[in-house]
Image (cartoon, rainbow, N blue to C red; front, top):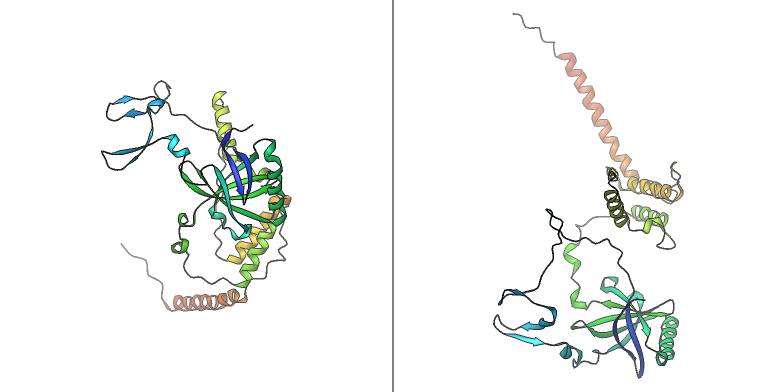
Length: 312
């Protein structure tokens, strides 16, 4: 059972739902420690007071806001727990919106909300059922970790989920990252849509959606533990130098189909339109020019007499 991160209530108009917040995700990453190469002793970070030049224990450490270099305003846990905010002890729902109206870039980590006791069971279920039937999500405010946050409430398998959200002014303007102006044809768009259709899956599950990095680290650790040769890294695939975008799309469809079905034969890319005739038209002048150059070179060779060999 995951530990409770925060306890409070959801306020929905005059309805109050006592809840407990637990993490909705787990981190399975393999973690490393720093150690001294000479003797494999652990290297640790210690908390040292700069004025006394000594290590201090946790009960000697407090929070504070540095007003100037010589003046610090101390802030206690009690101060933070009694903030003059209605969201300090409650997740306050402000509005309901369609999920598609929320830019995913604003959505951060997720938490499960569980009812706190029997008294919360009915209002909890009421809110979950209403949210599910409305096909909307709730936008709420709450205060954790020294700041007020914006949150998104939705339903997952009859359980309320809270996603942390970023405030509008926390999202950077991406306009400066736009690519240079370029024309994309309808044929190329249709080709990209055909590739997307080939790569569409029903669920994000299976061998394609596993953490291969963690698995590779685990194999290295096991090999070193058993003093065996380390697993060899696969040779990186050379990127195909394809200048024709339509040809690249066709090859991508073929590769995607092969990875799904195991069929390495030629792909049936009926969805992809044939390359534009302009590409073929461009080649004709180049071929004619090459033929003219070859004929001119032969004529010049006939007219030029061969060199006589040098005599000693």
